Image 1 (cartoon, helix red, strand yellow):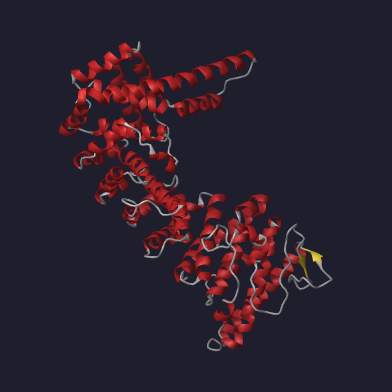
Image 2 (tube, helix red, strand yellow):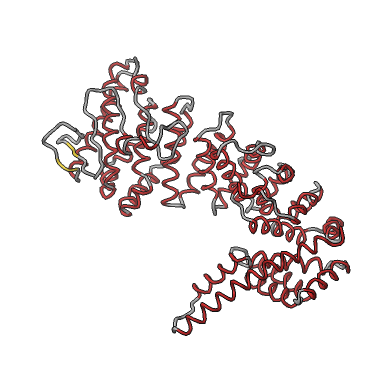
Length: 558
């Protein structure tokens, strides 16, 4: 029997995230015990570490039977690291000396794996992580990621996953910083990706190794978000896209890949551009097309679908990716999803919103009209679907996305296509204008309630002599947005656009409803003026100026 076969007799590894084939979590052993493996040796197992009473023998190896034990301290960790270095060197030496005689290095490989298991106990004392760096153990561990025996690589991955556990990292900020610095300097992501390339996920242990590798990346990016860009550049993004495309049954690893992808793309234009260059938009559209006519079969598959939609929305923040989305027939796919009325519909609406917003969305807006998208979007405007609770989307969110799409269409469409859009508001005795004004008063009332409450709080604060600083004003503004202010601004924008479109029937209907409700056009003007003043966060100065000018002109011409 060779070394690899012998090592695979170990029990299931513990992982950071739950996997489909895990036993009932209620009967799992404690996490630290679950992390150790039986390598079919007669040596004693490490004790459990329930209350951080780890015990270490004089040679640095944990033993449950030795009576002469001491608490795990700095000197004990040093001895453990020294033992690890010796065993690693010995194994390397024997493999070089006897490359074709596994029986000659088998014993040393088992010894090496044993000490890697014992080192899991270091994860309970992050204050001593600096010893791993100072004694060069981090570099040695990273070197073992390229070991000829994948079981050794997987053992190292398990150890790194536990060392980088996010809760553990937060226990000692200083220790965590030192460890993460060393891992980044050692190009850990690139090494992990190289290791991922050779793991066979049809073998359970190696599939677990993939899962734990993704857990290391999640831990590191959560602790230090700027690692995301570096990770993407070091081959991770390419591997994730390849893994998503792989014709494998849906499993926990595919779900985890979708989650890591969404994390990498958050607030990172470099990664979004790289994904576009790697044909990632097409990959995302292909993976999502499955849900065009079929709902996800499990909660986990639904989570993956939402992660992929999140990733797509994030990519569409970049104008170059909007062109790729257009050429990849993303609009047609999203439009079909809206018509099919499956679970994917609410997220497809969100994608369309991202694809059409701003001047960069002009081409997508025109194409949307060409593919008869108006026939799809207006029924959703007229009535919010009842089945949205399944996807966790509120009525307000749905109405916000629909109104944002209509506002983008009115902003970007030109010529005949704009005329087709405006004419929709005259159909069936101007029923769409009636719906528009219904929503306008709904959210005007909601914002007024919020404003009244905020004014009361401000009055009380002034009476108590408290200062209303900028942070507090920002908080109050966010509360107004939560109440529906942004949606109210969109509705006023749409109203102003259709009133200024030289279609008397539409303008007359708006004025008639305002008069019936005892309201006036002045309120719409005021909302638009406030809206123009709030534009600009995250946008360039040129866009902000032109958009403010456009909205103020709309308000004035009313």
